[in-house]
Length: 504
Image 1 (tube, rainbow, N blue to C red):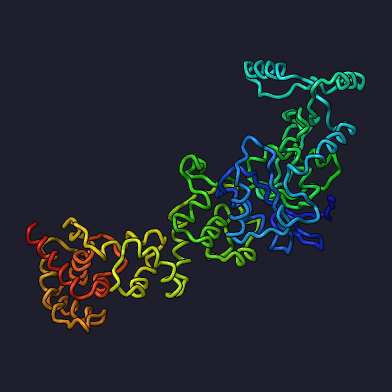
Image 2 (image 1 turned 30 degrees about the vertical axis):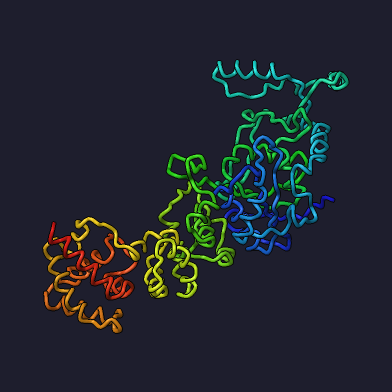
């Protein structure tokens, strides 16, 4: 049974709440992976509903069978569950306004369209494909925007009955006003006004009796009591038609919140075919679910303060529609990495060690390594768990590195002073007893050399790090690496470094 919910109204910039309940919906089509933009729509709809103790509804719009992908509904369920966007009503749990799968609601739409025919807001159109194709070609040749010419708008009841009795195929079109203007208010874009003469008499019911997306969407939103419609701004141009449908039925119009797209660049949209990541792809790349949700919230929305790191519950409290921008959001991988790193640094050392261990073990197999110390080195420098294997791949085996790594402009090192530093370090490090080999002991000896050579720290510590790792970027400095590798391995690697520099 379909039950209509009470409505309430909102005012630009500040949602004025009454005792009436907020009801938002996420209505994806099961066409494959979860696009970042789709997930953002779901997130905003969830945040708005929960901020005001409202209901978040999941509706599956599966009527486009050509684009339907087997298993895509499960992807929608899994993604929402993983991200914590748990719905209050939906296909799997039911609710008072079901069914929540659009294909299971088909019986109602034609009846609603016929009501519009009776009230004069829609009409039967019997134009065949050949006529419509010819009309479109003439309009295009004349430089006119394609639009139905209203050929069947004013058929007499007798003419309509005759064609229906003859079994001529038809569609039901919305009868748009031809004069004046239609406007609507959007929480992000303000008042949008269109000239009615530009509106096309859109099809509501197709020849097979199925509703078009635009018509089903309006009927479903009304019958499900949706109070706030959050969607992409590609629907701005269709919204005047939606409003005319609401008005024709005498229904309350929901509050509209249109969001600008998430872009790859200022001119290029995110696209799976271009290799842009879906939610699942981001997880596979090593991003944490909480970090992804946090970042997606910031794609086109700005919190009021300086803080940008929020849990989902903190986002519920912080979220405000007035913070949504009209401008497209650019997907910034570096910012996502930084936010992911902030979440990684929130873990306790034990939590991080447990999560990092599988990644460490991909390239570091040595059993004599103190994994917890290695994890303590990695955590402050880690933005993605998937970066870890490459960061620690030198531990088991010293790579065959280029001696140019010893040259560092900022550290003021070159071949000559690097060789001098390693030659000075070797005997003092060899003096440390193996049982006393630890960070404190290594630190003391290294700084004795720095003092003796009367140089800056980097002139000694950079060559040490290079000799021990053979890498430009490591999870720790030379002293840390020496402690991890142990005395024997560290001494042997310093000797290799000396040999490389001497033979340069």
